[in-house]
Length: 384
Ligand SMILES: NC(=O)c1ccc[n+]([C@@H]2O[C@H](COP(=O)([O-])OP(=O)(O)OC[C@H]3O[C@@H](n4cnc5c(N)ncnc54)[C@H](O)[C@@H]3O)[C@@H](O)[C@H]2O)c1
Image (cartoon, rainbow, N blue to C red; front, top):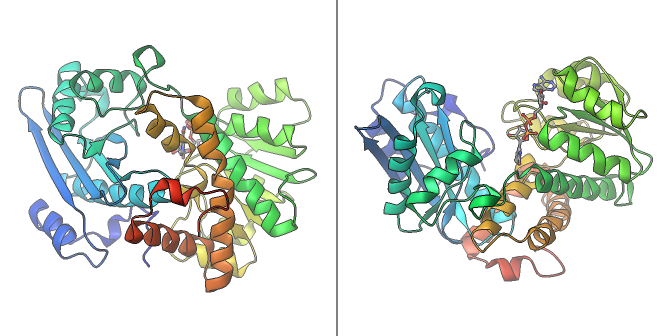
């Protein structure tokens, strides 16, 4: 199984190839099974150029955010949309949602290109898919943008509470990461608690600072780092027993039981894995593995890695719930299942003799192939 967590531009079709050949190769000839549908969108009046990629609707309407980014080329944008959509199929499958995977990218610098006119034009393209694609925020798009996109269709989530949305998803994302960490603690040390453990959190922004609260409440000792001094100060002022170190490189060398990357992607590179003192890695950041193979290096060192896309699914669980009229408690109950899913992944990894990242992909593929409905997947004893 290839690595679905990476946005792997190196594996793209020759960059000299046309967008059409890139799409065709991935859509119809991909060894990864291809995508169901790719929509290229253009609205000349507003300058909108976008790609909406639907990887799979086997489990339900494809769900995934809208990335707004100044890509180096249109080919790169298509490639990103295809990779991200595929990743969402896996993420939504293991999040126990009745949703397939999709993703959209809007091509251009959001600071200069983003206008109400453009967002409305984009919203009409989402509408044209008639519910096959459900959108949300991603890098470069915000709750206020989704409020505009939602004026053109019924399939936009990530809206503000004033517009029927659920708002900030970091609360449930942090809660889900904490559930994944409890599962890792049980697997590594026998008890589903971080009590008495020393946990290092790299990045104490929206998700990281909520995670710190869960950890302290559970009785963990917490060490933090962030490139922003105000983010660190906000926590140490409130919790004087939390200590801080200068940067993530220092943090991974500090004696730790658990390392929680909660900043940017690529946190687990070769040097970091070699230096890690922690024997559990579980954090919110997307695409933590810097390159394929890192998951095996972690396993070889006896480090239990909780796959990022599984434990950080609280946010997507929240936006999926929004479609039904957001109910925080209902969404939190679903996010609690991240504990069972993470345990099931560790069990499968042990049974199959593969790293947890590979076991997660296999479980997701199994659910998609079997078209297992959420009601069955989320039964009390957890996923098969
Ligand atoms: N917000 C969500 O609901 C959500 C959901 C799924 C995944 N994620 C992922 O979780 C991660 C954190 O998301 P967030 O919403 O908290 O973002 P954020 O921007 O609020 O927080 C990130 C924090 O990391 C810090 N940071 C950046 N580079 C750093 C570095 N090199 N070392 C230490 N700290 C650094 C930033 O200063 C910031 O405080 C991201 O990778 C995001 O993609 C977030």
